Image (cartoon, rainbow, N blue to C red; front, side, top):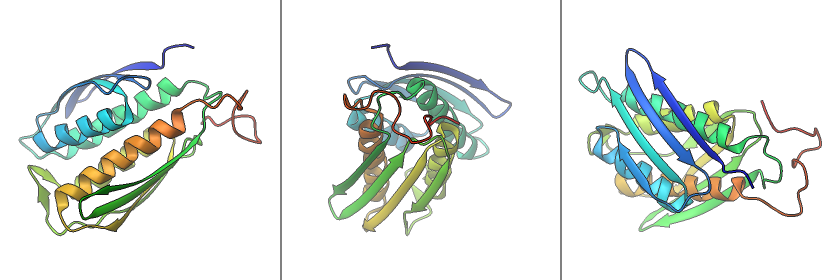
Length: 198
């Protein structure tokens, strides 16, 4: 089996991002975005999905965190899409209902090649740590469209904003791990069209 590893470099006037991403990793990460809570969320994603990630993101944080978070989502989506290759033999669909204390978040993924985000997380504070909670949606939107995945994230219960966000990132990790895994019964791609690429 070929290694499903991707390296992405993206530089604009707003951000400079380098990422190495391994779909078939062990859950190890080296992550630095300049935003502590975002680092924590990405580390949780890597660990619970059993991916590997090296990430350095330098952004215009003197403006705010928006460009860094959104562009990291774009780069992660590109890395996921590239790592999946032709998608032959993968399960394509994945889902997880993940509890974290009082919070319960459901995530479902279709690696269809058709981007779509359905998002329902509700926060009662504008910030968690030093990140605007509204940027969590921007991150998942960027990932879903850049990767070409149908991504649903639904909050079923929750009060603590940290727990809600972390449950979402972990549920996303588990669903992606499932969707990108191989099924020996699938010889080509799981589609009547014969393709699940853009």
